[in-house]
Amino acid sequence: MAESPSHSDAQLVAHQSPGQQAESDLASLVFEMSQQVQMGMENMLKMVNEIDQNSVGIKEEIEKSKDFAMEKKRILEEEKEQFQKAAYTILDILSNSRG
Image (cartoon, rainbow, N blue to C red; front, top):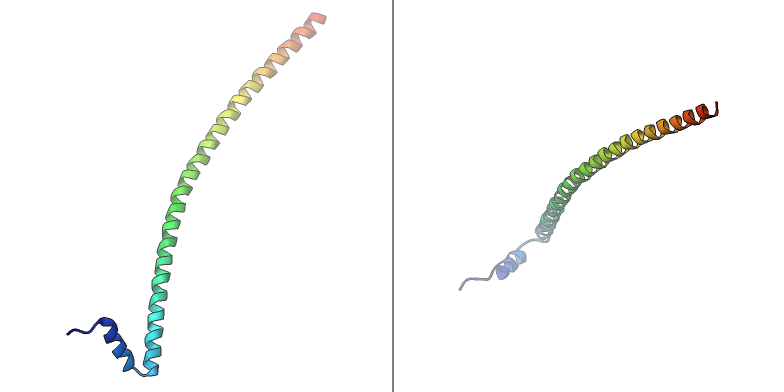
């Protein structure tokens, strides 16, 4: 009859000295911690990649907004010039009609 792994492990632990047991426990703890750190690093890498993807989209939106603002500024400058010309024309007409 085959022994179960937990029973076999228990026999192994029973035959270890306290120093060996402490070393084994410490090795298990270090292994578990390294696994957790690795999972954490993988999760952080996924988040960094998501942030990079989102930042590309945000940069594109900022560039579109800049382009829109520059076009709007150009249009407003043209309208300003047209109003100024119209105002000067009206002032010239008014000043010539009085004279």
